[in-house]
Image 1: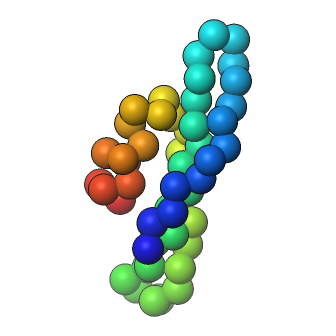
Image 2: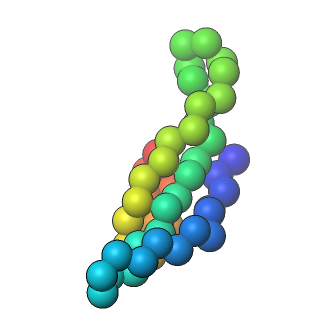
Length: 50
């Protein structure tokens, strides 16, 4: 259950995207959110790894 967030962040001349993914904890079974700020080209790779 991954969801891409469409939050574009502008810092000087670089364009960054904040990606948030919901991950189920194997220990407790509860869902947690993992966040990361990266360039838009890396979002799909990051979502597939986590």
